[in-house]
Length: 120
Image 1: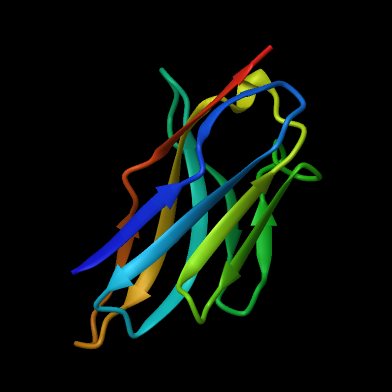
Image 2 (image 1 turned 45 degrees about the horizontal axis):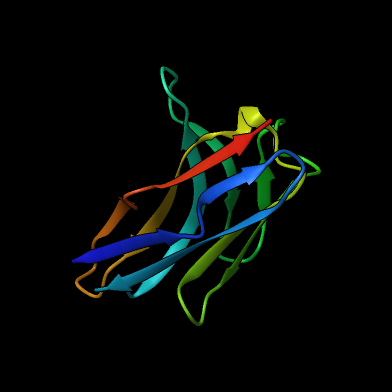
């Protein structure tokens, strides 16, 4: 069993910042790629930012220059620092991780999501 738990969401005003965290726990041998996705009401889930085990990153155009993804491999954590938030960033943010377990299986896992609401 593997669990991903997000934290750090909340209600902020436009222009403010938030830092999301995601902790992975359970039967973990190695965490490969990790990422943050978001889903706004009535829209499809979309990638916000991704990071490889070795620190390579990629961002959605909407996140470039404002959001920074990082990770702590020793603690099985991934972060999303969000600055200059806009009302259009309002969504449920999900943590995603590709994890290899001690039993040799590799699977894709999702957290339960954390709500980010940006007021204008």
